[in-house]
Length: 338
Image 1 (cartoon, helix red, strand yellow):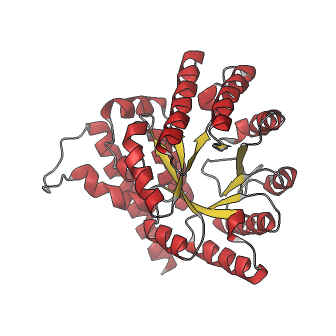
Image 2 (cartoon, rainbow, N blue to C red; image 1 turned 180 degrees about the vertical axis):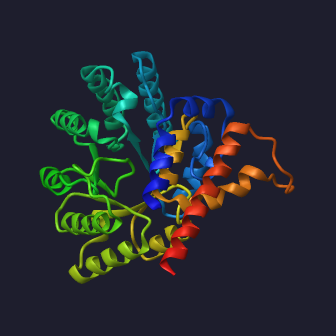
């Protein structure tokens, strides 16, 4: 059931028509719970509030299906503007970027040129740039581009996905690079990736411990309290400095844990997505944790006065149907288990 539900939401994330319509209709699926706004100005106050609580941020200017150079150039310009704003407002924040948004699928050298302009600006402001890892078809190119950029810039790193078989080997090759460790949010072939939660979690813990034994900074990105507790125990047992890593979670997820970790003396960072192109990101978050549909259904159907909203039929029906299908399958599974 879980794999079917995950496949369903990932399929929606790749639907260009729904992505395009979502831009027109705005936040109609409760995405405001997990996406901080549609432009940089929307998220400034959010970042300041987080910083006041000792929480740093990484900003992701969302973008999907970039198909021409003008779109990629526009994304580059916006990211540089974001860097300027971070510097002007003196925010504790770095920036996450996707190479496909900057032209990877159009022309690799063009993409590298865009990245260099971004890194020039980021270097001037002493801001770190993290290259998000995308689908496996982009994996090798992403690492290749990172290697090229690292010849000139040190303020750039990337992401390792623990569901990939090759993750441990790549982690070793990047032992001197600042990395974010995640489980992985895309549907990949079992020829390249673990499929069961148990295997993915086990590899995540293994890789996280290996990074903690090294010297480079690591963002440990998970919402799993069991994994967090095990890693906290490992840090204490080995008397590691808490300055060599941070815990990281997505905006809007497990918020009760954010301040708890800060109060315990851990570095904590919130991954903050924003922008009009929010639909694909939102669907992948539901794919990771379909239970989040329960959190947004009420917002989809009811307004603050508890009256039914007049929402676009396609998205409203999609959301409600998704919940009903998921709950039906979940109930069937529960009956089998019991």
